[in-house]
Image 1 (cartoon, rainbow, N blue to C red):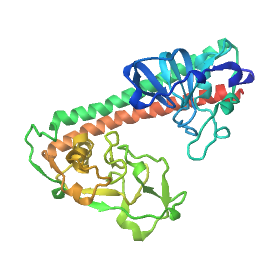
Image 2: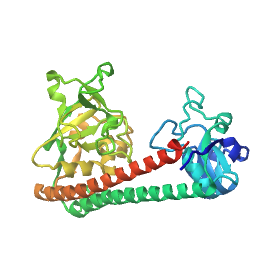
Image 3: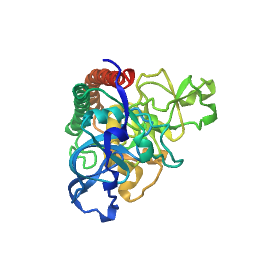
Length: 377
């Protein structure tokens, strides 16, 4: 592909921001039409102000600077848009899908204003430039990226189904741990584990390499995440706080009361060892309880509610060692727990293969985007 002319958004799009109407939450009436903001649907309302093929671009509150979350998205048909998203309607020389792909991950760092809340105002937005190949080429590029995006979403859905399968198998083998329909003997976790607290690492001592220090954001999705990971030089005095692959870690504050966070994690072999930071704790298990049974039980919303006090009306921000030790759970025979663990290993093997495939697809998508919107511009 040869080089294409670069054009400003303000020259190839109708800017329909003047039609937008913000409506406060208290004034919105429930309905069937999507109500859009900076990052997508906020809810559904009973009326619409647009009925067209459009691209919405975050004005403020967007994922500016993110490499994973887009700042623009496509909408089609009847909808309502508030004043947190610019409304772009491409002119005849511009394909609407191509427009969306060209600005989804646009670097607006030099265009945004505001200190407390970043804002991409209309004057700056109109100056954004995109390539303008012939319409037939635009359509071909959009179709290619559509297919790649569809494959990514399909693979993500397959991985999500495996997670649902684990939850289903847990209930099938053990029943609901709240009602305990199988009549397993219940006991406090103090009989089955010890809680080891973390060390108060100073941010001044964090390094770019060494032993990773586990903070809340590294474990609260249920699996280890290296996002914003920090390191500490190895220190023999901190052996007490050293973790190994296979250890169970739980976060004690921050997202403990949110159902969409797992809060408890079995560490993988991403690193040979980890340091346990404060506000997290290691659960050192006895032979009477399997780590896979325990972690899956602790992820059940009602169990989390008991642990955090939310089910008792106590919206505490922290979970203490005694909260964990005093939590009562049904404890099935260890042989049955081990069978569940074997099931988990098989699922994780399939999940790993799917995740590798997903990573390859995402790399392909990224390389295509770079090819179409970077190299030829």
